[in-house]
Image (tube, rainbow, N blue to C red):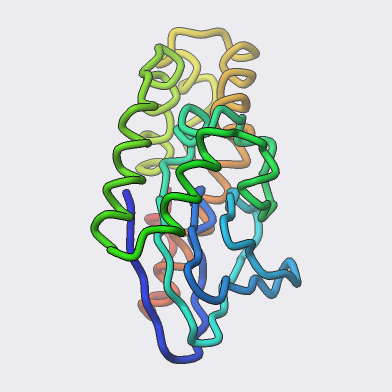
Length: 203
């Protein structure tokens, strides 16, 4: 999924700890207070295991791709574990293809053309594999029922528990139990923001 965002006022938002993103900032990058740093002009924003916020000084214009947690690796040829709990410059992974896309987006003045550049690049990188499919099913299960046991997830993926945990970590960037904890936190946060206090249905 891609988004084009603009803002002219000072703002602060809670970020989605379950998603990895590729923001391309055309104006002032966002600031992450928990890490005490601003994003780079072209950033890879990893999953985090703590509540995180993003702040804008009002000069916000960005194109951003938001990824399912098990998929970003196929698009940038870098495992998610390389930027887990981190905000890194996209140029740091030294991927010539990705850097070229970033430069074309920054040189482009038409929003629709910028999105087309990013969309065409991402579409060209899709290479489905058995592990992506397996872990995709696991992520869907954990999003619905985060208390699902690792043994049950491994059985659904037709893998032994150790092999499953290794494949999950390589694909998502963290182990399944940690991912489930983040899902529970996100669900509790969503309920709290809606003013609800009954967390029994979190799963």
